[in-house]
Length: 131
Image (tube, rainbow, N blue to C red; front, side):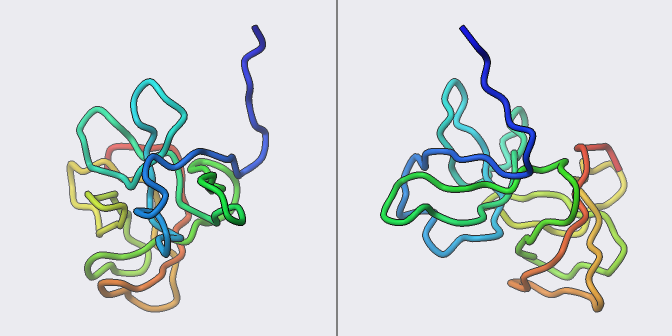
């Protein structure tokens, strides 16, 4: 059996509950263990986010996801105050907040001005690292 892979920054996944993802572009998602099905990031200790929702394919349950760790930046949603240049961490519900010492960060906020809750922000994502 061939193992599929992608060498692009985006991949397609089936939504567990498509209605839960409508209007959530830029929110972090995770795989449901043992499947290739996605849901909003739940902040479960053993499950990491895989990327941010990019777009739903027309009239479908399949979504394109911008994968974390690829070149470039990702659009994410802030759920609190974040200072430009600081690391961000994912939280339950698929948004990000400013990371503190000891947190696991997923990238750096590179906006032109500080962010507040519900702002759409630009994050230079990277491999998940301890901050």
